[in-house]
Image 1 (tube, rainbow, N blue to C red):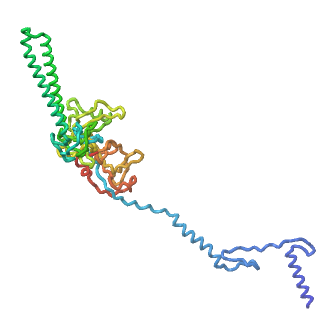
Image 2 (image 1 turned 90 degrees about the vertical axis):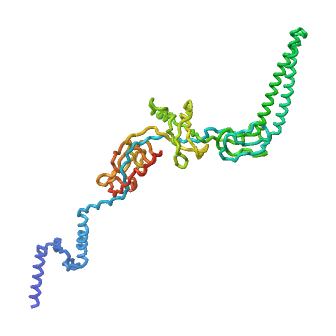
Length: 440
């Protein structure tokens, strides 16, 4: 039984070998066993021992979940973004451009000087006895200003008067001699020579008398110089010499200066081109411009002198070194407010532009010599507009091109604006800023 069972097992192994190797056991060839085919199921793992698939685990599910989450995150990015909301309106202050007939002014810096500036000097030598005026006050013509010691001059006058008396006595004697010798010569009682000598002596005595009279007059004049009076109505300056000082030695000592300040003069120089343009504005039917009260004086504090002035002096030629032409204008100064030496601006109209368009300076933007303003459109948007500027008129510019009457411009708040920026407009009136005469 045991051998039959052993034999049966041997045959089965032989049969299995043939089926596996494909030939008899005597064939010695190397045959590779086919690899088992394994199909992969997602979520299954292969066994390291027999290659079988195991049940899906937590790690195998993590990757699909991550991919799904990534897709969910990317889907909103693929949608079209909604348009941004419009920017809020910028609050600005705007005004309609100002339109009016605008004078164009010329303006130059000048300095005041008295209509007459007189230096008071000592004309004789002597010690100053007194100062007889208050410095810096208005003095009338003929008022005593200074007194110089006059005793030496009184003595000189007395000496000259004595000399005159002697010369007069000599002339009278010579005159009597001529009257006495005349009849004697006619009767041939004396010679012709004697008579001629008498005539010559009378003429010499007369000449000496005239010289003595001149000496008296000179001494009297010098005595008069010891009392110094104001030669005009005006304002006296400070005294340069105090009482007790010796004056007039070797030169005429400056004592003070008196200036006539009503009217007061202002001297300035204008360019040759402006002078020609100004003169050409006069028509033959008009008076010369320098004879008209067309000049205004703007003082250092910005106020305008209440009286207009007229030209009183024009230089004979243009200064070739500077190309300027000197003018001098007189202004009435009844209150003596203006004093010599002050600086001011002289202004006068060159021409008048009819219906000029004006904008305030603060509304103008400048970039590399290009000027522009923001114009408010009908749909309340700020649009930048280039403009061509003309002359200044106070705080305004005359616009020669780029703006029309009736347009509104931004006058405040333009720093936050760009082209086509929506604006919330608050209107103001420029006419209130331009009241009164325009100032350059």
